Length: 148
Length: 142
Image (cartoon, rainbow over the protein chains, first blue to last red):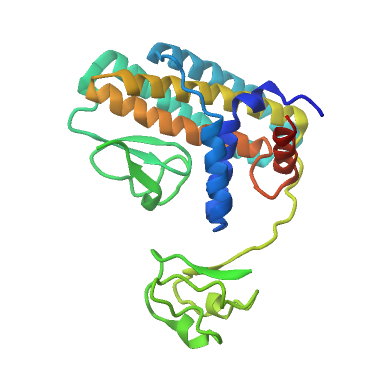
């Protein structure tokens, strides 16, 4: 048996929650439940978190996306290029929201709602659901409101 | 392949009821009864004026294989995004400030979605695919 790569092992909850969603789309609800349980089984909480550390990691991710982009371009893998295009835009928005919170604090979200695009992860801070996701062009029905 | 109805797109014009030879499209829940649906018939799919009915596959073709180096880099990106998701979750769980709680909750969910996209493009898109089968076998044997 080959030893599982570290990055796969660390990401098992993500791999399985994605397969859960795929199974739901295929209407295989038993399979979806099975993957959902596996996703939870391998999940381990982080002890603590820090906004500035997250921000630094996002900056690193954005630069590694540029490297993967050239590799995927050489291989003609347009699926990866698509994921990087969406993921790069979403990462920039994640970073910008952290920057704005670090400078404005609690005033940032006051009187505003946060909406999330379930298709690409785009975060929108405002008063109404966007008509169309500016990152992936998913319709407003793919947005959910975060929190209460 | 059997038919399924997207209820939010269905305009209740009921053309599917006229064409279905088994009555599978006519149910109290609004969803098509897959046990009565004829494999691959698709009469309702073509008759629907709102494109609210589609066919769900039983079998899927094996996806095009991914280049190993790109896949590994996408998994590195996946695990980095996931580490950030967990850090955001820890902040959301421990913070008393409502704005920070909401922001980190949004980040947590957004990071999971982007991490999942990396896993998909690293080759774990389709549950019925060879990379997923190999992964499941490996987990079962360890």
